Structure formats: C-alpha cells, structure tokens
Image (cartoon, rainbow, N blue to C red; front, side, top):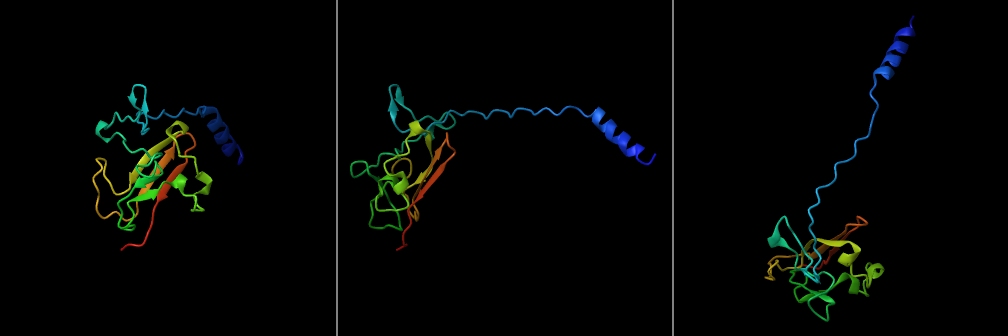
Length: 154
C-alpha cells in the first residue's frame, strides 16, 4: 500500500499530461533597412523605412582620401592626422593582416551598425572625439567587427 500512492500519482500524471509540442518561434519583424552605400540601377541601395532621414551615406569600403584607401578623421587622440588607413589597407598592422583586401562588402552581408570618425552625417566636424570607430555586422555569419583607432590625448 505504501508504494501504491506514489505509483498512482505517477501514472495519473502521465495519463493527464498534455503532449508537449514545441511552438515555432515568431518570425522577426523585417524592417528592410539596408546600409549599402553603393548605387544600384534604380538609385542608392541604402534604405531606411523606419527613419528615412538617417539613411546611410558613409561608404565604409571606399575612403575619402588617398585613392579611397583612407577615411577622413577628426580626432583629439590623433591631432595631426586628417585621415586614417582603412582597416583592410593596414599592411603594417599585424592585427589586421587576416582581413587585408577583403573590404567587408555589403554584397557579402556586411552592414554598418555605427560609426564616428569625428564627423556627423552632414560632414560637419564633431568636437571632442577621442577614439574614432566603425562597427560592421555580417547578417549572414553573425560576425561583428569593431574597428577603433586609439592614440595619446594631447
């Protein structure tokens, strides 16, 4: 009799249990935002339906100086530098040699998350920038690349 009650409770719980069915995850709300800075046949490919005034105009794979190999820079930490080598152009930087020449293109899934090189979206210099950065995300691999330039403050 002593074992009867736990056995009955166990059998009853099995009999009354509802089958567990995994519910499919709700799909993410697709925003359709693209940071692709290149123009297509129908116009610019960068698109932001959520906030059209914030559509990307920064071309991270082609710089503004030195035949597209440098990004313009305005930074306290680098007071005499008006530009900085793009990460995939830094052949003298051993931390970057594995991405040399790759250019993180939008066609390969790369999207711009955020950037601050000392200029706002209209191209006006921003004061007090210490560590300029560019953050890229690959929507296919989930890889995040954060490029930060550091230097001694003057």
